[in-house]
Image 1 (cartoon, one colour):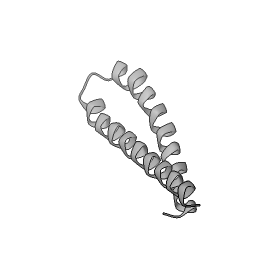
Image 2 (spheres, rainbow, N blue to C red; image 1 turned 120 degrees about the vertical axis):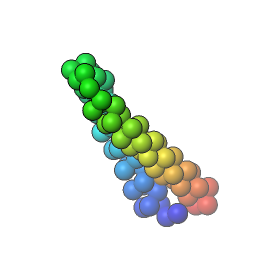
Image 3 (cartoon, helix red, strand yellow; image 1 turned 60 degrees about the vertical axis):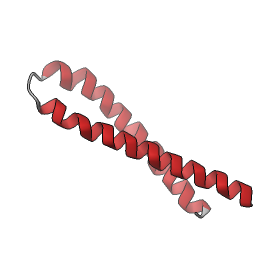
Image 4 (tube, rainbow, N blue to C red; image 1 turned 90 degrees about the vertical axis):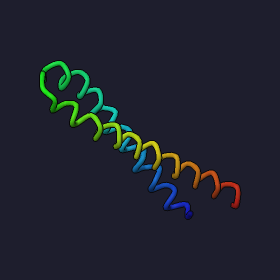
Length: 72
């Protein structure tokens, strides 16, 4: 994986983690407290899956950067 690809994956991963962590806070503080129906629980898997994708992209980017550092 090239250095540019690693940087891009890291940036996208960190961005997704930032955005979806703030969305998780909003979900817990607003959606769960104000809604009495099932709609917040339909939205919850989207938040969890997006956080998992952000973690995975960050992992790939950091692993690629580490591999680039070893090879020079």
